[in-house]
Image (cartoon, rainbow, N blue to C red; front, side, top):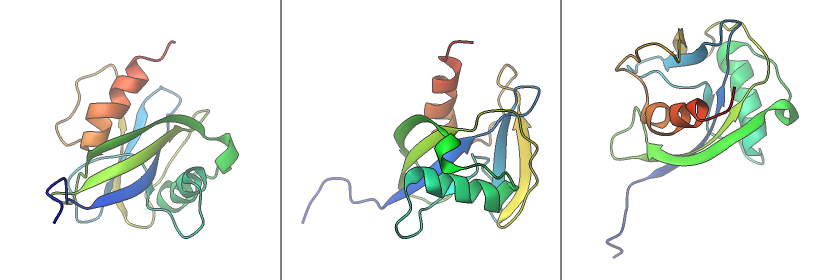
Length: 139
């Protein structure tokens, strides 16, 4: 028996979407209490970017070709809504400014001011990896 990490690993893609004011889109899925990026698990044969583009359309109504997404990074993080589970997230940014509306399993959307005080209900991927990456980008 392998005594190393035996926790499940979920592979996901996620997208950073911004509005005209430069705020970051976060979403809360039904039955959960953490806000995160739009995104989710790949379907058979999908690339990470294809997954991200499909999930963006399904969850918040933003239609963007997979090729238009800009890679931000790939990280391991604790899953926000599943105990003792890690996610491997490929995160992209969507160029431009967007409007979004909750669809599919999304119960609520919230635009996050990255210069303001952060709420305490954000997913670990967002707080531990994505926000520091966004803050370190020039401009």
